[in-house]
Amino acid sequence: MAESLRAMQKFFLLLIFLSLYGNAQNTIQKAALKKHVAFLTADSLQGRFPGTRQDNLVQNYIMGELKTAGYQPILQTFDFASRKDSTTITTANVLGILAGTDPVLKKEVIVLGAHYDHLGIKNGKIYPGADDNASGVSVLLEIAKRLKQQDANLKRSVLIIAFGAEEQGLKGSDFFVNNPLVPLDAIQVMLNMDMLGRLNKQKHLYINGAGTFRKGNKMLRKLAKNYDLNPVIHLGSVGGSDHVSFYEREISVLGLHTGAHEQYHLPSDTKSLLNFDGLQMLSNYIYQVVLQLANTEQNLAFIAQD
View 1 (cartoon, helix red, strand yellow):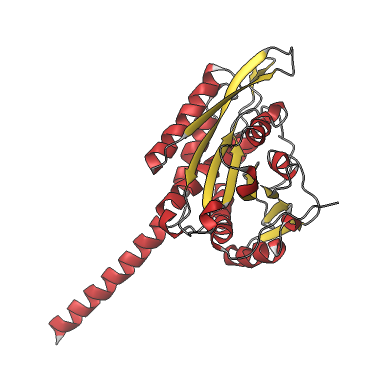
View 2 (cartoon, rainbow, N blue to C red; view 1 turned 180 degrees about the vertical axis):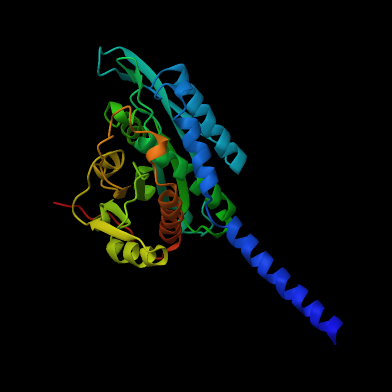
């Protein structure tokens, strides 16, 4: 009897272990987010200014992470005129795509994006851009990995884009919508992550563009309850950043951020000020939003905002 009881106890302990292990595998981890941010904000990258050797290093890092996750990354190179002196600068968007599995819905695409560039060096000081936008890129990479693990369960296709030269006037996203690697009319929703690293005590996640498709507000609030988040949802206001390039092409958008702060576009926007617990929470929430959009039967057609 005692031996049977011990065997049963071991069995239940094994079930608990497997459950915990499975949850760990299916949850975006804070350590991974910290690793990406540490790389992107390192002094050696000198503020990730477009067209520099450091810019190329970031592109290679993102491509390497996507390859490791099982993608076949694409480098979409483009030129633009510098704001400072109109010289030609060459940089790139980095992309990875997951094909949907539904016979009909796989022709539709959900885009998840974040810009990786920042302001470089000014007056001898490095602008590390930890919140803007190492935070968003770290989330992008980890969601991309998790989506790849679930690609057999995605009805719609999902396109991951790390944009270059956002700080120069949305150059990367503007180039993409003018030179799309998937038909623009196939893109149902574009989610853009720009500055996710400062989740406050009230757990406010600001979301712009939720009125650009039906039932966006309801979906976002329902999923937020699973993470004790308090989304501040703007239906009609689209805001700024790379999703605007898509909105102007009449594509539904969501712009996600945790709000402005005193370190915005200053050398003091460092990783030491990031809320990594909050970043982890937002990563898992946004992942669920992408899954919902990729798998819903709902029509996600664009609704213009005044």
